[in-house]
Length: 174
Image 1 (cartoon, one colour):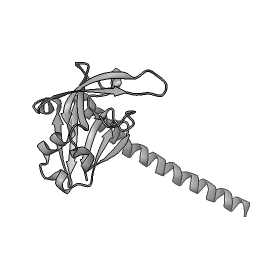
Image 2 (cartoon, helix red, strand yellow; image 1 turned 90 degrees about the vertical axis):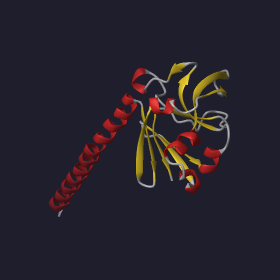
Image 3 (cartoon, helix red, strand yellow; image 1 turned 135 degrees about the horizontal axis):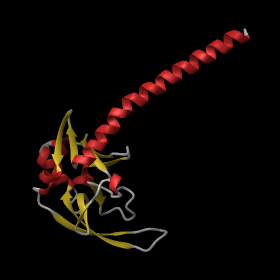
Image 4 (cartoon, helix red, strand yellow; image 1 turned 90 degrees about the horizontal axis):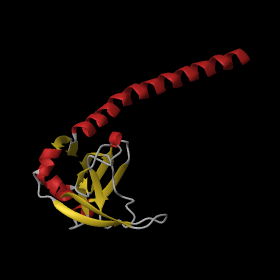
């Protein structure tokens, strides 16, 4: 009986090892894809099963807005920051004009897996959510270079920057 339990434990451990190895192999491709989006400064926008890749140059063709915000912190002094970007709804309307009228939410996903959801009403609200690509006149650098970019969402009505999304690589309209 004791020998049977030992064999079952080895089989279960072997099965778990196979599952873990499979998950690692599956995720390696996803990690490399995210790195490529960062490296190439591409934002992947998806709606209704269709995805469109926008380059930084294509985003720069949209009307840029300079925005000022105060980053508040409970542990440090407030910091005034100037960003350059485009209202997120303008980016989405550029790629999928009908999307926000049909959507309930917009999900922003970072290369590191961080994901934040905004309601479509929040996205459509004037002077609220921006897709930014520069801070203080300098490009947002990718994470590997110590930056927060190349893209980031900034929610102006979020007093403590808790709903900002650094290292942004994907936006999905749902």
